[in-house]
Length: 197
Image 1 (cartoon, rainbow, N blue to C red):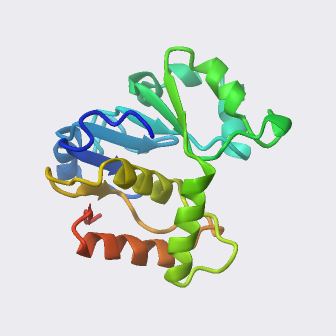
Image 2: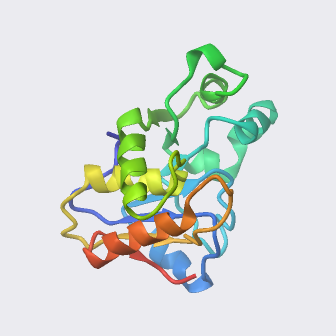
């Protein structure tokens, strides 16, 4: 579980890396909890100026670049986040080769950290298979974080979790059509609201 403030009684905005309409920035910032991803495009502009949690992919080429970037910890979005979420469990035997969790933690000493666990990945993969995803499939960080938030805050008395900038497109290793269908199902159930982009 991660430290969503007032998760069961407050509002949550999750901001993907897709297009966000300019008028949505104030809606994003008004939430009690604002979760963003990776390089957080449009942070400080159209997509609003608040972030409480920043999800940083911790395996592969992107985190390797961040680990080598001298000023990464001083980026506005990184400095503004209270908590860093790592979507993949740490691979201690592949440190600084495939898994960059330790290097990122050393670069960000002022932050608290939370790592999404294997059980969440298994839950996401099973849900995606129901919606036609091939096996094996790799859930996107956006889907993993959304499911983690829903699991931690099942009482949505303050309304559904709002998803901004979810374009369901990007890296070919994700099952985008299955992710879209799964989140649309959760939208029909009143758990999330996929905001237009």
